Length: 237
Image (cartoon, rainbow, N blue to C red; front, side, top):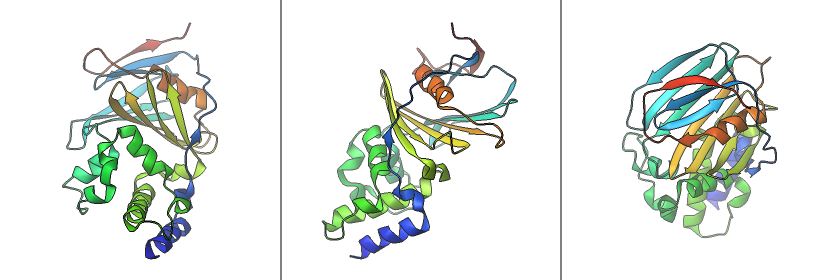
C-alpha cells in the first residue's frame, strides 16, 4: 500500500506526472525558407534563415555531442546526441556517476527493450497506472519511473505530451507549442539512433508552431558520415 500512497503524493506535488502521451494529429510541415545543419552525424532543417549564434560542447560521458543554436529572431535549439543509444533507462541504470543506487533490478526487462519502449514506459507511467494491490515489484518500478518522470522531464509536460511517427523515425514530443515556449523532442528509432532536440523561444511574444517542429522532425536524418558542423540556406520548393 505504501507505494500506492507515494504515487498519489507525487501527483499532488507535481500534477504533470499525470500526463501521458496522446497521438500527434497535426503533421503539417512549414515550408518557410530555412537553414540546414549537420551535427554529430545528423542533418536537419529549421524553418528560420536569420542570423544565429552557435555554442558547441565537446563529447562527455553522457553525450556524443551537444550544440546550442540561438537565432536572432528569438528561437533557441539545443541538439543532444546521447552516448548511450540503448535508451534513457539503460543510461540511468548504467551511469555510475549519478549517485543513484543500481536501478537495473528495479527496471527489470525494460532495460533490454528498445530506446523507444523505454521512453514510452516512462511517459505512460502515471499515478493511475500504479495499482495498490498489484505485484510489489511492478509497483516499485512504477513509483521509480514516476519519480524519474517528475525529475527528468521539463515543466512543459503539464501542457501535453504527444507520440509521433514518420516513415523513418518515431518518438515523443513533450510540450504543446500553443501553450508552452519550451518543447522537447525525443526522436527514436532513427535508423537505430536516438537524438534529443530541445526547442524554446527567448520571449513570450514569440511562439513555436507545430508545423515548425514538424519541419525539424521530417528533415532529421543520419548523415552519410559524421562531419564537422555546417549550415546552409534551405528553402522549400
